[in-house]
Image 1 (cartoon, helix red, strand yellow):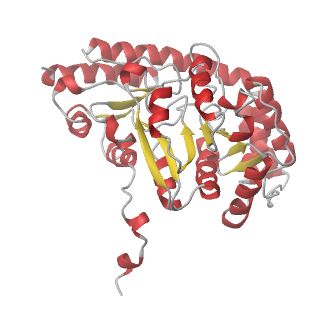
Image 2 (tube, one colour):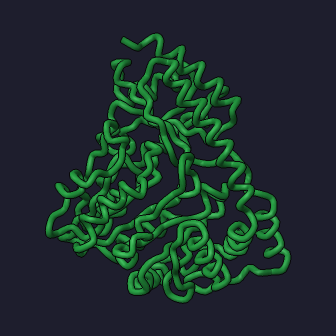
Length: 389
C-alpha cells in the first residue's frame, strides 16, 4: 500500500504556504532581516501576561466550557459594542476559538460543501481557499485591483455571484495589501447582498490596526447583522500570536452549528489564554493605541522607502503590511523575493503566495523594529537599483 495514494486529493493537491518557505530560509541565514511573517514584534503587554501567569499560579489549568468562559464571552460582547457598535448575546452568539484561523475553518465547514461556491477576494490570507477546498466547496476568486485601492467593488462582486454562491469572505483590513473598506464602500456591497441567501464571513482580525478613520464592520448594517459572521481575535492587536485565542460572533443558529464542530474537534481554547484575554479586553486599550501609533510611524517609513526605490507602492490604511509593485524590475514575484534574500539578506513574501493576481507584487511586514526597517529599506533600494528598467 502506498500511503500517499490514500490521502484525499483535495488535501494532497493543496500547495504548502508560500509564507513559511521564506520564514524557514531566513532563519538559516546570519544577518538576515525578515519582513515576511505577519507577527507583532512587541511582547504581549505585561498586564495580560500577568493575568495568564496568575491563572497558572491559582491552578486554573482545567478545561473551560466548550464555547469559552462566559466571563470572556461577556467581555467580547462589551468590546464589540463599544468599539464597533455591534451587540451580541454572550450566551449563544459568541464562540471562543483557537485563534481566528479555527473560526474560519469551522465556519466554512458549517456552511459550505460540495456544490456550493465560496467567493474569495484575492490577494488575501493564505488559509481561505484551502479551507474552502477541504469542505468540498468551490472557491470563486475575485481579483482585486490596485486601481481600486484593492477594495471589493460592487461590480466585481456582482459578476462573481451565481445561484450556487453560499459564502462571501470579506477580508478587511486586508492581508497582504493593507486595504480597508469604508462605510460607503460597504454600503454598496450591502445593497447587493441584502436580498440574497449569502452568508458573509467578515475577517476583522486587523480591525484595531486602522490608520485613518475608524474600522466599520459590515455587520453594523441592520440588513446584514444576521447574515454576517464576525471573526476576530487577540493575535494582532494585542500581540498575542502564541496564545492562540480568537472568537466568532454571529447568529445563534450558525454559532450552534460551529459549536458542534468545535466541540468534537477542539473541545475548548487554551484556559490560560482565555484568562489573559479577559484582561486584554478590559484594560489594554492604551497598550493597543501605543502599538498602533508605532505601526503607523513604521508604515510611513516603509511606504516612503519603496517609493524612493522607484517602485509604485499603494498606501496601506490598515493591518501592518505594504504591498509594493515590483513589475518595473522585470522580475517575477518569486524571483524578486528569492534574489533579494540571497543578495541582500532581506526576506519578503511573493505576492503570488496570496493568490495568482499577486504576481508583480511582494508583501513586506512592518511589524518589525524601526532599526530593521530602515536597514532593510536601504538594502532594498540598492537591490532595486540593479534591476529596475
